[in-house]
Length: 216
Image (cartoon, rainbow, N blue to C red; front, side, top):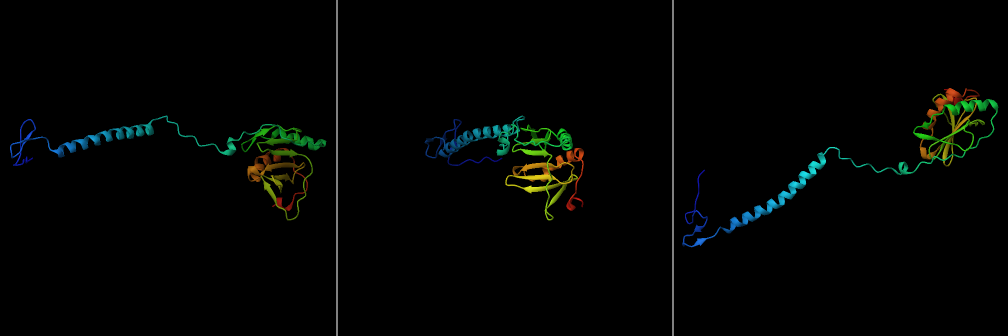
């Protein structure tokens, strides 16, 4: 690499420069400015580098727990386990036997809703979740109109009546009627009678006049 020197300046071993007029000159101002700029840049770069390295290690560090999602309002609300108010009228002997068979086979949960105690007639009543979905066995079957909709769910014929707060579904093809009340807060009522229909088929004999809409 070629070395280029100025014909007007000479530099001795101490780093001082003699000008053409013989006077001794100090280091050029431009060199001092460059060194100052380099020092400032170094002071800025070091903290930034440390911060970036710390951030990278924090991201890569194993075992760092992820932030938990905020619970929904429904899951955060305490679920009541208090007994559910239900009526228990006296049943004739045969319906009482059938209803005992039904309630003894009902699951402990229905689609995630836990079973709750009832105030009366556990041999014919059951309740799940909060607000309570209820199952009542016994009583008379409703008589739907000729244009009313009926639904077959898992081989059981159901008739639905919409109320202000809940849908009431009652069997139409069983020896003893089974009534399921599903609060609107739980969504579509038919999805809730699916697991209950399986128990109805296993424990409540078919009987009575089956509506045309349930015979296919």
